[in-house]
Image (cartoon, rainbow, N blue to C red; front, side, top):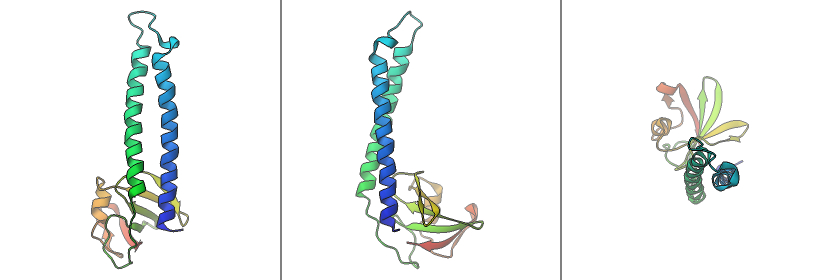
Length: 153
């Protein structure tokens, strides 16, 4: 499995999440405008609540679609094991005896997939871990997080 496969898996996850969000938005929009949520009195706020929920879901959908577009444009380069970590690196770390991977990406923070039987977590420039890893090399320790960098790809 390569870094490209990891990114393909992440794209597929994002597309599935977007499809679910679209479906939920459609249902919520129908509820906001449907007969079932018509006000039955001055204290009945079902339609207003459904409209607020639809608005929030639409905003989340727009954010997710933008993140998907950004990840589709993301073409990370290959890193040699001795290079400093920067955007696009797939970093292998040992955290108290457990191996995991972090993909330094411009978007998609928090998404997870598997790579070589281990978890891969996407981290973005906004995360403290991304900032701590940037500029480090294989073999470096991150004292605050008890991580040892064991590989860079």
